Length: 309
Ligand SMILES: Cc1cc2nc3c(=O)[nH]c(=O)nc-3n(C[C@H](O)[C@H](O)[C@H](O)COP(=O)(O)OP(=O)(O)OC[C@H]3O[C@@H](n4cnc5c(N)ncnc54)[C@H](O)[C@@H]3O)c2cc1C
Image (tube, rainbow, N blue to C red; front, side):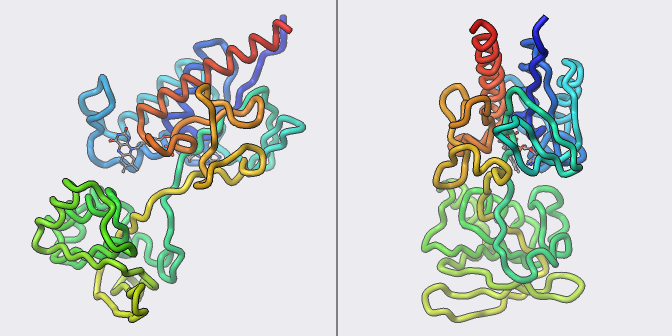
């Protein structure tokens, strides 16, 4: 009997778990390395029901994550709670934060994306102390308050419309000259009397004491600064792919996403990438599921072809 092939899947979001389920279904040994305390990735940040995944009329992110985990476990997927820090191509190994080293026959990068940060003073300090993680999670928390929303895309403007129903005032701060969100979303937000938009403006600092008290802004054209009194803020300036451990070993595009072909193969043989980390045009559950199964099928075919050599 030949050696059992071992596939390491880095990241236990939808894409990683889809790849893992399919790898097991194809008879391959598979370990999912996930750094968070539970699998599911971004599903845990979705507070409205998911209604656009074909075949499921409506489900919460947490429930979807639970079902996926149970399904992967029932297929015999192994889970390792750890973080991949780097990889060694020559030795086909991943180095984990715990100090452990694991060998692989094929590697699937399924590390998703993270929210971009502004990188300004007070941003970390006031996280959870006025700077909100989500607008939809607990909109009642902003009743009677002023909320500053940073960003001009769909997520920023959509959150402005949600929070306008609760807050006294919502101020959108956008560094560009016009909002980038889709027009129906902009229309809904701008129809709210208590939503104000400040274009050509950036945030330079979050200020406060035990909690957020205000947001310092700068006009990008004349450089003038002003302080907006605000008890809450929400930052929605886009996402960045989690590619740091792999960036030297696989080709990335100009935005840092992993480049893959139609079989989810990266520029390095035996390394695949699936879901949001590679598919910026369609960062959706459907894409994560589909690319996970594509990579698994491709890995299976590649291993079979190596065996027949
Ligand atoms: C608020 C919100 C609403 C959304 N609504 C919808 C919707 O209605 N419909 C829809 O289709 N999509 C929606 N999405 C998008 C959808 O959730 C994502 O496209 C999908 O979950 C991406 O899955 P993923 O597995 O590619 O990445 P992620 O879910 O980002 O998973 C990546 C995982 O990798 C782990 N990881 C990262 N780096 C490492 C490392 N070095 N070592 C170990 N583990 C690591 C992370 O901890 C994470 O668990 C929404 C997303 C958000 C945030």
